Image 1 (cartoon, rainbow over the protein chains, first blue to last red):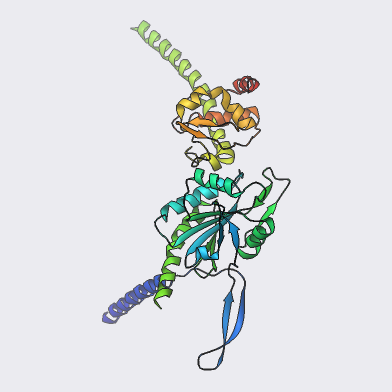
Image 2: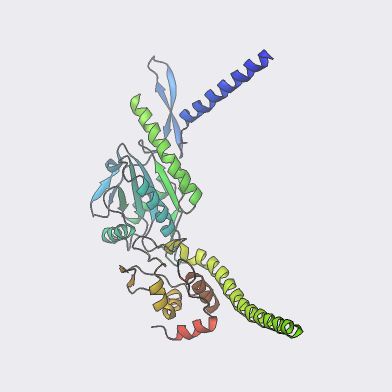
Length: 221
Length: 139
């Protein structure tokens, strides 16, 4: 009987430890292509390092007609998406959901937002500015950027892994996926959430603090 | 005694008929309302929201009962043909463009019954015939 008791105790303690350790170690996955690179360790032996896919350097006009680059997001995490202002299908619901997240993290300077327009004909910076204002967004925390078709479409498909295209058969003229892409401090893709799906948006809301905590831990090392 | 029982029976039958008549109309309105809700979710909810709250200053809310009452005859036109003129709802001006949804009269009636009996509105039935008449008067 005594043995049974102590065994139960041990089980309880170990499972508690296991659970808490899981919690501490919770990390978001890294998406995208990856390569390996042979490196030299400190002791001179050869080792292998992983090179993750990152968002390349970009330079795009924002809603204030000012060029912004990666520097804007240095040391921050951000959520990127692709939309256009005259879109009547999925964009309103995506931005309704993203606005909720924006409002929640309004006071957190480490979380930024970046929306790219795929309507390179109509969505000039002044149109974007008007759109942002009407959405209830003001200030540099949420950037709306405009760029040439090639730049934006390549960035979407090759870097953020979001499909976008022009489609003359569609009422609105463009089709695109509604992903909200979560990018970490090191420009790596850490999550993609369907901006039209309330459950996935809720998951994004939960994942942001996890990513922030992870970055803080890395700072301490 | 017997006479009063007969009268009572007669009266209750009358009220029964009266109420069942009302129920038939009510049933039709409810059917429109339910179908209208599906149409609303499919065509309108993206911009106007699940609770008719609108979207910032991009899309007006559908909670302005006075506006919806005053412009009821125009609602079918707005939905069918779209709207690019500014509208004033709850005292705020909305300039965004609403796309034309080109729905059939019966669908327009159903979605309008849903909208005008939700989000604080309570305007009752709106028939397909009325839609046809109102569409002729579109500006």
